[in-house]
Image 1 (tube, rainbow, N blue to C red):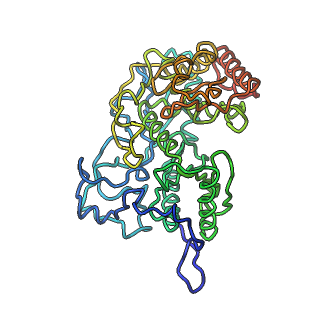
Image 2: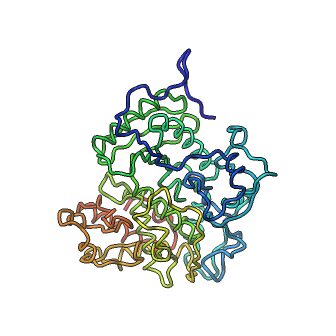
Length: 465
């Protein structure tokens, strides 16, 4: 359990320095956190149209039972063997991923008094085994290795629960400084693309207005750093003054590394979007985790080194699954559900438990798709003329992307071009150096040629290309 340090003879005060008045808001930025026992009394079940409690940090892990037998004729498990993180089920009592029994007794609900229906049933974890390759699948070895890596290294429900508990403990500290703030888990931990060793990204929303990243964001992070130094469960807190300032720190109990940013609402929307893609087809998560492993090994997965960020790599692979496959593995959820991803909506109203009605007709295996991903960006995608657009689910011509770009920012469309799904900027702008971009393309090309020849993923990890 997370504890906080109190000064001898005094009650705990997480922050003793005065906070600038323009950071203390009169209206709550997040809807009030109503204790579960009060919800049980006032709202026996969650019904559409009733006042909603804040959904974001009350979501279960995106892990779902995997198919015991790998599909023989289709690329997705049968409906009986699959569970989406967004399908509504009925169960008794609070979600153990958020309300740990014995830790917060005031939040516990008697199972005889209320049934909550907006969260999936957490069934007993069953033993999962590596599915056999599809019959006559030339890339069966690749498929098996991707699946083995995913099963071994994906973020477990236990890892996710630890992060949720840490987020709740941090929020208890932050709201003493900024009473009406909102704290959101973002990035791969929430979207479903994290591994066991992934850090936790957090976004603290203190206002629905833009803030000065270089001055005001740093000032807020310094205030939080002072508070965390008096918290027993956090260590190594350090403010990093980058283009997007962050506060880095580590959880003492489980060693979870955290990056905290301020008012990055686009990052919250991105996480919301990727979480739905993760649930759209069961092959998306294994492919992205393996692509990140491959990119890290070849040192092309680090924006600080002018290569591809993890977020851009995810968008590149999703765009391939949209426009590089026939039929597509996934389609643009922004086209299918435009109201769900409306850019102008308040992030406090983002819906996390909507079931996506989509069933892919694509029957390719994981090995087929990963090899196709390498081929797509090695031989088919024209980096001079094309922009990878997940928003539209296709390759956009570069001249079209430039029409909504301010004239002072046209230089962003250089080398690698991946459209940000909401603000329509180039999320891969970090890869702007011609020599570095040439090396990235060399890695894609050599990886495709080696894997298509040997049909064994071990050739990708003998030495960096």
